[in-house]
Structure formats: C-alpha cells, structure tokens
Length: 273
Image (cartoon, rainbow, N blue to C red; front, top):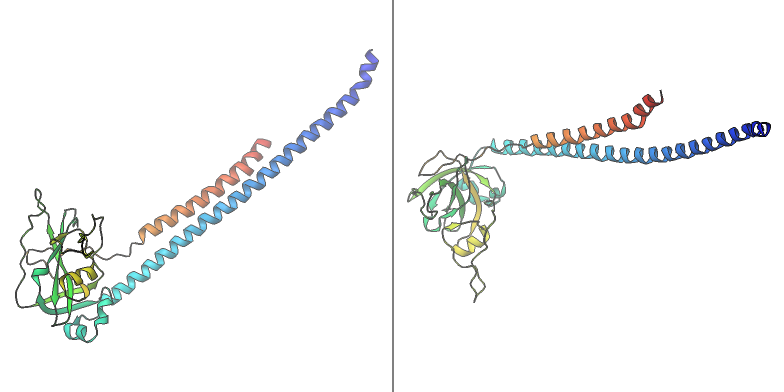
C-alpha cells in the first residue's frame, strides 16, 4: 500500500502543477483584459479632460481679444450728433463713445426695477433723447435707489428742459430679468401702455408704444448728477474663470495618470517584490 501511494505522488504533483499553471493563465488573461480596459478608459479620460482644458484656454484668449477690441473702440474719438445723424449705423457699434445734444422726452421716462448697483436695490432710469425731428435714442441715464417700504415711491430726478448735452457710449438694449409678462389687450391683442415702473423693456415694442423710432441705445457716462448715479461696472475681460477651469481640467488629467500608474504598475510591482 505504501509503495502504491508513493508511486502516485509524482503524478499528483504533476496534476497539481498543471492545475496551478491553468489557474495562473486564467488570472493572467483576466488581468490583461482588465489592464486593457482600464488603459483605454484612462486614455479616453485624459484626452477628454486635456481637450476641455485647451478649449477653456482658447475661450480665455477669445475673451482677451474681445476685451482688447472694446478698449480700442473706447479709445477712439467720440462721435458728435452730426456724425450720428449722418450715419446712424454707428449706433450699432457697441462701446463707441458719443457726445450728443438733443432734448429729453420726459413723458416717456421708464424705470427698470430689480437692477442692483453696489449691493443696493434700485432702478435704471431710461429717457428718450430727441436728436432731431425724426431721430431719437434711448438713454440709460443712471440709477436711483429703491424705497425701502414702497417701491412706487421713486427718488426725485431732474430732467432739464431745452437743449442738453449727453456724453456716453453706445450700448446694447437693457438686459432682461425674470418678469411676469406684458399686459396685452384682450380685444386687440396689442401690448397695452404700461406703467413707468417696469421689469423689462423691449426697445422695438417700446418704440411702437410711444410712437417714436428709437435708432439706438446709449449708456450715459457723465458724472453723477440730476439725482442719478452713474457708477457703471467696469468692462473686464472675465478670463480668470477660464484660466481656473483650464487648470482644473489639466489637474484632473494629471490625477488620472497618477492613479493609473500607481494602481496598475507601481503598486503591483511593489507587491510582487
């Protein structure tokens, strides 16, 4: 019996060795497939995050170029009323400085609410300025604070009569905030005449409402006067956020690479040793 058992030992050892080799082959194949999948996922993740980082850098450079163009336009000489009347197209060149003379149309003054300035709630005051019999511009004259108890109690402002001089720059239409909608006549379907205090102002609709063609919008940049504040925000490039986003994307790409090499190469190598 003992001799028979001893004779079987080499065969058992051979079978055990073959079994271990088979198991190791399966484990090795599984690890290779896993490594391939993880490598592909890492490559895709790094490529995507690097691409997003490069895109943020390009956006930052675009903002810088746009800001440089704005500064260049602001550095140009201010256009006077005759130049504007001769070529009204200049009123589409946003940030172009203008020096206008005309007459206020105070009966069409509008107060846009929910327009904060320097952390305070208030109104932007807009009044049409008539340059000649057929040409008027909408002027963002300045800002007034909101009454703490009653929003309809407006701070007094002075609107001079006769010929006035306004210095400013061509601006886009007033920005919109979330509103409750326009008042529409149920019978005619037309926008009804609204109160001076409004949440938003559509320049085209406002022109139709008051029966005056407004050929452009001007942001008045004169010193504070007439009960109005004109501490408008400085125009900045706003590229800092793009640099920050780019750094985050590149850092994420680097983290992916570090984790990949640590867990797939360095840690297994140290464990094997």
